Each structure stands twice: as C-alpha cells, then as structure tokens.
Amino acid sequence: MFSIGRLHLITDSRPGREPLAVVEAALSVAGPELVVQVRVEDDVDDRTAYELAVAVAARCAAVGASCLVNDRLHLALAIGAAGGHVGARDLPVHAARRVLGPTAVLGATARDPETGAAAVAAGASYLGVGPCHATSTKNGLPTPIGPEGVRRVASAVPVPVIAIGGVTPDRIPALLAAGAYGVAVVGAVSSAADPARATADLLAALTAPPPPAPRDRGPFPGPTPREGSPVYRRGAGAAGW
Ligand SMILES: Cc1ncc(COP(=O)(O)OP(=O)(O)O)c(N)n1
Ligand SMILES: Cc1ncsc1CCOP(=O)(O)O
Ligand SMILES: [Mg+2]
Image 1: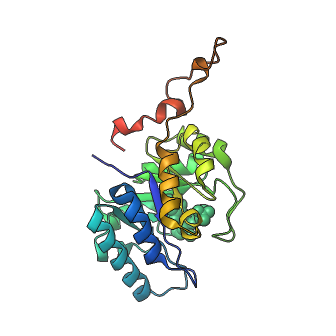
Image 2: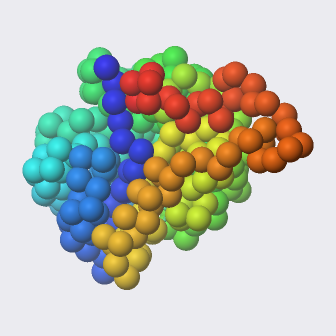
Image 3: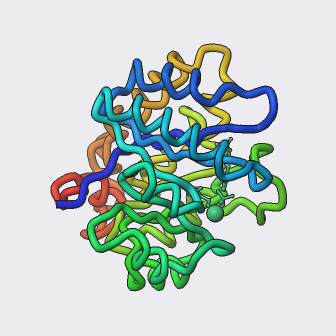
C-alpha cells in the first residue's frame, strides 16, 4: 500500500549551502520518518545533481528514509529513488507517471483544487500545495495561499497533501487542521543554526496531538466537525498514507 512520510526535507543547493551535511543532520533525528527531496537550482548541471542525489540516496537507504528527486526524473530512475516531484513547468503528470512507472511515488504541485484533482487523475500519489506562506527560498512565486488554500485543495483530493512554502513549526498546527498530511521545508532546516534540532522541532509539531475539537472545550458546545472535514482527515494514516 502507498505510504509516505509527513516531513519532507528539500535540499538547498544554493551557493554556500551544504545540502549533504544538512540531510545527514536531519536523518540523524528523523531516520525513516524523513522524505528527502533532492532539488538543485536550474543552472546546476546533471552530473553535479546526480552526484548529490547518489550521496543523498545512500544516506537515506542507510536509515530507511525515502529519497525523491525534483524535476529531473531521469536522475530519479538512475539512482533508484522512490520517485519524483513535478510542477507546472516540468513534465506533465501523466508523462511523469509513464517515465517513473506505476508504483513509484509521484508528487505534483498544486495551489488550487482543479489543478490538484487533475494531477491526481493523471497519476499523482501526493500533492505539494503552496506556497502556503511567504518565502525567500524561491523567487517568482505567486501570492501565498495560507491554510485556507490548503483546505480548499485537501478537501478536493483523496491523496496526501504536503504543505510547502514558509513552513515553520509554529505554522504546522494550522496547516494540519486545514487538512495537510505533512509539510515540505527548505529553509526551516537548511537555514537553521542547528538543523538536527530544527528537524526535531518540525517532527514534534507534526506529531503533537491536535487541539481539542470545539465541542470538547467547555460547557458551550461548538459546531461538530462534519465527516470528511480536515479534522477527520488527520486520521488518514488508516488509509495507508
Ligand atoms: C513537496 C513539494 N511541493 C512543491 C514543490 C514545487 O515544485 P515546482 O512547482 O515544480 O517548483 P520547483 O521546486 O521545481 O522549483 C516541490 N518541489 N516539492
Ligand atoms: C520550491 C518551493 N515551491 C513552493 S515554495 C518552495 C520553497 C519552500 O522553501 P521554504 O521552506 O524555505 O519556504
Ligand atoms: Mg519543478
């Protein structure tokens, strides 16, 4: 059955960064719970990207973590990654599915329900949804969609939604409450003074019990969550995610 982690670490390969050291630190804390997405800047050549991907994949394999490759699906196949992630300017989802095969993990970017539903119909196993919040990690992104935007997409698709863009531990509860299954981060780990500690903080936020439903808060009952609402969706582990 399809299974995917809730914390996705996307590599930061901008000049001056140390993606492999960051991945090692995160894996030392998260182990098999981590999904590492190898992402390089567009001007990085394939050989350099391949060498980073091989090194990341080896470290993931050592602890049972999953490795995905962003954009460059030939690299995903070449290194035996669990799968890849594509967005609007990459291969279309149906073509990416043909490249990766029927059982690979295939992520697709969506910021609205229509795009998300189309991506799922075309073969996406999960959706990366955002940017949720402002970020300086990637230029040219559209206006952040916030937790409400996540809610709109998550309520329209039957696959895990991974919230991305400006994600920090304190923002995770609202994203989960909106129906996100997990989060993808670059800066929250890669720009942290202590990437291992930052990883632990993100994991703690992802696994913290949700706040009590309104009806449990006191003598004045609030609205009961509807079945199928994000409050229920947090139990999606039962569906095999
Ligand atoms: C989990 C996740 N979600 C979204 C993205 C963004 O993909 P894309 O829109 O193709 O942009 P680039 O990352 O390729 O610049 C992602 N990588 N991962
Ligand atoms: C690649 C990408 N796509 C949407 S936001 C983003 C970057 C997210 O980086 P950060 O976690 O540092 O905001
Ligand atoms: Mg892309």
